Amino acid sequence: MPPADRHWAPEDKWVNFLGHKLASPLGVAAGPLLSAAWVGLAASRGYDVLTYKTIRSHRHAGHGLPNILYLDVDSQLQASGPAAEVPLYARTAASTSGQHCGAADAAVGGAAPLLAITNSFGMPSAGPEALVGPGGDLAAAQAALVRRPGQMLVVSVTGTPGRPGLTFLQDLTQAARLALDAGAGVLEVNLSCPNVGSSHVALYQDAPAVEALVAGLTQAVGPVPMLLKVGAFPGDGSGGGGGGSGEGADCLRRVLAGAAAAGAAGVAGINGLSRRVELPGGDGGGGGGGNGGVPALGPDRPSSGVCGDPIRAAGLEWVAQARQVIASGGLGLGLVGVGGVTQAEHAMMYLQAGADVVQAATGFMWKPHLGTDFQRLWAAAGYTAGVGSADGRGGRG
Image (cartoon, rainbow, N blue to C red; front, side, top):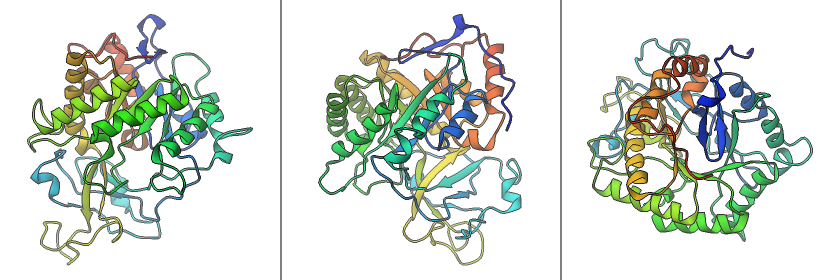
């Protein structure tokens, strides 16, 4: 794909974020940018905050096929509550051949009004030999940015639980050092993937654990700008991000306060919403065929992450709540909004909700002109998102 003819803002309109001057507040979230080639593509298509796909300290294989299925969803999803327990249905039966999306499904904007997918990859990672050193892909990714100022590379890292002889923090530290050795200027610590772990409380919702993890990682690798990637927080079921009070809001306050105290520079959210995804059929409302209750991705993966348009309301509510927590607590954290950004206008909605930076993932993959569309909209708006936006804020560098 050739480079896009994008609009570049004048430098006096650039955005400050984590000590970087950015040509715009639009980026790509961890997920699609699998290599330096993908980073270079995004950098040429109107995106300026580019997050390299989550790496581990060691080579790690992904799940088998299928990894992505279209979903039969026509409304916004709630982050928690009774509605979150209802299964969703795949639009096409899974196939281990990889041909699990029919021609009709591939036509985005066809039968389904929303671009809705589920994905389950298992956070695969190349090994250190491919990532760092001479010819390493992380250094190549940094070099792949557009040959001008105004862009930044973020490297997403995670640890692997249960590695022999290593705690989760020790393994995470090894992954972070790989990224830093390759020249990463900003880390994103992925605590959010809905397909990882089976404990009752997700890691990102455990405030003492998050604070200890950030403190330990900062002590091990030094004062590098560090974003924490989180998912949606529990709420009362009436909205996407836990509302202004109650269990979810209290949990979010504790997590962000602890992260800030331990030295985090910012927070990013949300990841996909975890849902049970089943083949259509049976009594669950997914149509005929007798497949009701059968996991669409196979018996070992009854739940998976939902991405695309249906998670936008949850993401926007989370950003608004996180902005309120950061401001009222004087936490000084940068805020990255993610979830359901498939049109340029959606990115502006996140900025108006209080995000410093907004990122797309599914929208980047399915909508090749999303980045350049946003740059035109950003210019037409005078390089501001308007009332309620995060103009002038940017977290701790």
